[in-house]
Length: 221
Image 1 (cartoon, rainbow, N blue to C red):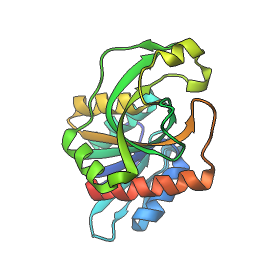
Image 2 (image 1 turned 30 degrees about the horizontal axis):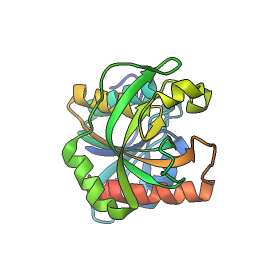
Image 3 (image 1 turned 180 degrees about the horizontal axis):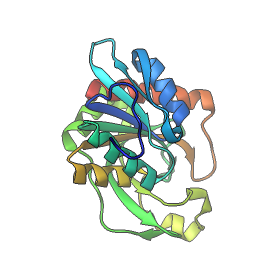
Image 4 (image 1 turned 90 degrees about the vertical axis):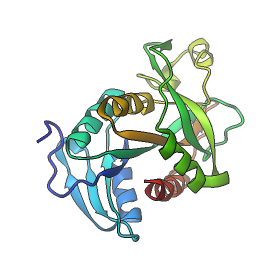
């Protein structure tokens, strides 16, 4: 039994991972028929059920930041998860990315401290990423992400400009790297929830974007 998750229902071999517990509930209700809560330990809400196509699927919250996400993925791998898609929010760094844009992650760069690179780029699972891109079509574009251990808004302008990626978040790089070490195929699709200039997506629009990404992820898995 994993040390952190305490499943009280089944865990599927395929999973959708989100940071926010509320988003995990929303996507479970959107994607699964009669979802059952599989975990509530540590506030990391997880759900299991079957899609309308009859496939088992887990939707699991990973908490905030890379360390939490990596630990949750390790527990899920111990419980039998072999493929996973992260659905998360990100700050758009490319000025051409509007709020609400979906980005399929082509590579992730871990950054630490006040904007310092930590190792090289981490790549997602190619097959799963391609399946996601097919499902999303023109609704999404590929892009690179800098995964920070602090909020993007807390970086000074010089550090922010040094990131050199399309978007920034707090956990994609950690999930991709941990997935490789666990032999779990991991891909990610991110919603641009705000721009570097401070333009934000409202809650209803963010939820709609997450649902579109969730349906694509469920189909890709």
